[in-house]
Amino acid sequence: MKKTALILLCALLLAGCVRREAPVPASPAPTVTPSPTAAPAALSPAPPASESAGSALPTATPAPEPPAPAPAGPVTAGVYRWDGGERGEWVLNLKENGTFSVIGGERIYNGEGWSDNGDGTVVTGPTEGAGAAPFFDEFGSSLWRVSGERCEPIY
Image (tube, rainbow, N blue to C red):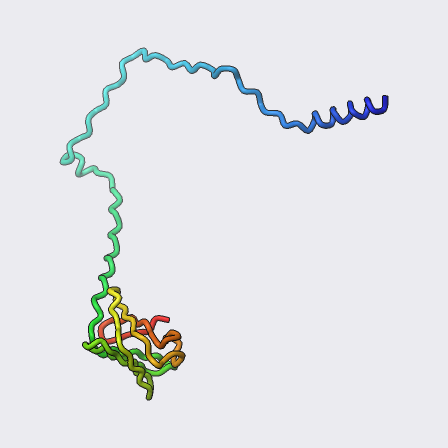
């Protein structure tokens, strides 16, 4: 008897823990659309543009789009300067024959091969300048942004 009472009690407790969903109606309630009893009122046509010009509501004018930035021109052979503040003044000398010099203070770092990236930047080939300045990579190469007669290393 005790086992039966215990099983019955457990069944009642579990029955209270079951999640019950709301019943779904068998069929949706029909919607009734009233039939028109009178003819719909005729809409008046919009006045021509010339008539409505005097009483036109203010309209929002679209904001002008900012001008697109001009694409950077090609980087050509020449001498470009950068004032590095605490790092001093630097000169990037790109030569027609493909060689270059990066001059900082009393040091000159020469190398062969520089390349215009087509976006206003130029990359130099390896030099003995590895570690000489934070903008030289482990091979002594560097990346520069050139604008006019000025340049700036890109770290």
